[in-house]
Image (cartoon, rainbow, N blue to C red; front, side, top):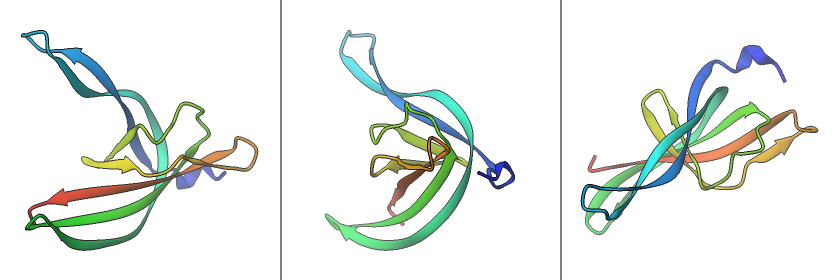
Length: 108
C-alpha cells in the first residue's frame, strides 16, 4: 500500500447506547478511531422518496487494515457522513481494506 495516497483523515464512528435525562435509551454516534484514508467517489444520483427529493453519493474508502471496522459503523470525512453499506473487503494479506459507503442528503 502506498501511504502517500492516504490523504484524508477520517473518523470511524460506532453506535453507543446512552440514557437521556428521563432515563430513556438514546443512540448516539461515538468516534472510536481516526485513520488516514483515500477516497474515490463512485457516483451520485437523485431520487424521490415519499414526496421528498434526496441525493445519494457513493464512495470507496481505502484504509490500512483494521479488524474492528464493520458495516455497523459509519465514516465522517470532510464534515460529510457516510454509511458503510457492505462488510469491508480485505486487500492483500491484511494490507488494506476497501470500504463501500454512501452519503444521503435530504431536501435538495
